[in-house]
Amino acid sequence: MFSSIYIEQIPFKNIIRVHEASDLKYTNFIMISMVSITVVLLGIIMAAAVFIREKESGTLEQLMVTPIRSFELIIAKLLPMSIIKMIGLTIGVAMSFVFFNVPLRGSLLLFYLLSLLVFISSSGLGILIATVSNTMQQALLLSFFVLFPLMFLSGTVVPVENMSPFLQWLSYLSPLRYYTDISMGIFLKGVGVSVLWPDIAALVVLGGFLFVISTYRLKKQLY
Picture 1 (cartoon, rainbow, N blue to C red):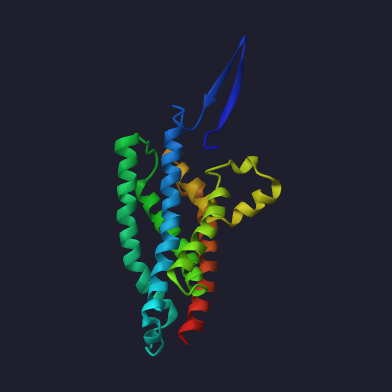
Picture 2: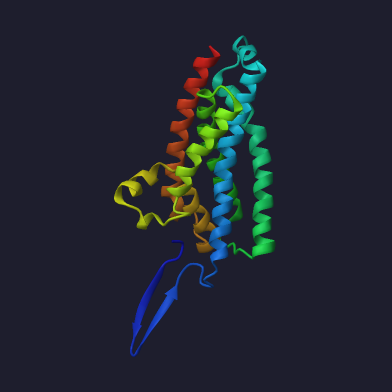
């Protein structure tokens, strides 16, 4: 799942060498997975909730008569949410260090930058959900309806290698899969951009695609 194990044959004995999480503590994997899931979850729910609140309060109609563009509206909404999310992420990471002794072998700054990328990407999905919902209850139900498949396809519950070929291909559509690989790589392996660039590129592509669709749908509602 998160550790790479191979057996080196030595005369009269087998030696199992663990390359990642050499202390074999499953707590590390669980805590990093929970932090990763929380980043994606909050990105979806917070973005959906903000725009649904605009609909319910009637201020979305007021925005229609302003010269503001849909892209500018999204940026204005995402900036304060990103700051709040980074504060919450700091609390989660600190708890992992203090209470569960999760190791950090890579760059914490790189983890924060990529976490911000994931948050923005998942916010695009949240905005898309908000454009097809009319109430907060609908948005929350759709958010959880989307989140659970993303979580199960990410490899945090069942290793991707153990899934059927169809689900393995489907897992490439889950941004949480790439973010989990990134988190495990930074915390447990200590790798950098030179190793993580395929996951980063996939997140950029998915995030850009979601933002294009959500911006288009929001623009249709504003104008």
